[in-house]
Length: 150
Image 1 (cartoon, helix red, strand yellow):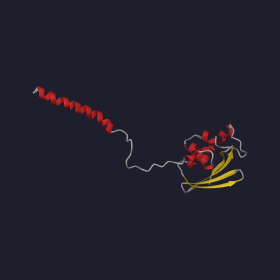
Image 2 (cartoon, helix red, strand yellow):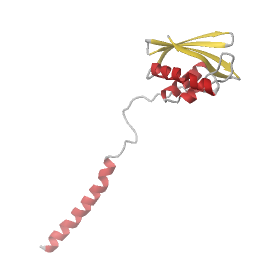
Image 3 (tube, one colour):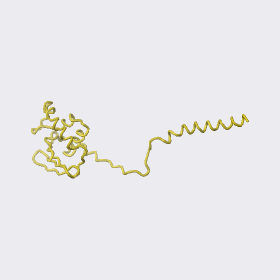
Image 4 (cartoon, one colour):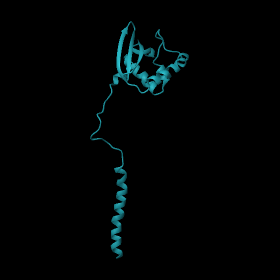
């Protein structure tokens, strides 16, 4: 009788150990999805300071990430000079207001108007609100001269 129970207990212990080892594997993260949503890759050229829309996109992303210092680096004076430290400090409340205005909104339409030396960009956000940006090219990079909401 003793031999019989000892033989049955050994495979049961191995089975429990095997089950304990395989249980975490069945609960792990999925490596791939067979039937999932289509993956959309955004156009990376839109995130370049070499285009007016690109500098505005970077500006909006920096504001969305609460990085007003980096957003202020994309701003210039009307004469094309970079902002001083005091000007960056003085404009930070306006950047915070613009961040709250842009928060979570996506660009649904854009209109670009080029005049002498500057590019005026009007953006429609979520189909109901508008923002206006004036950009200027300095040394083949675009900077934002002014911005406001409509």
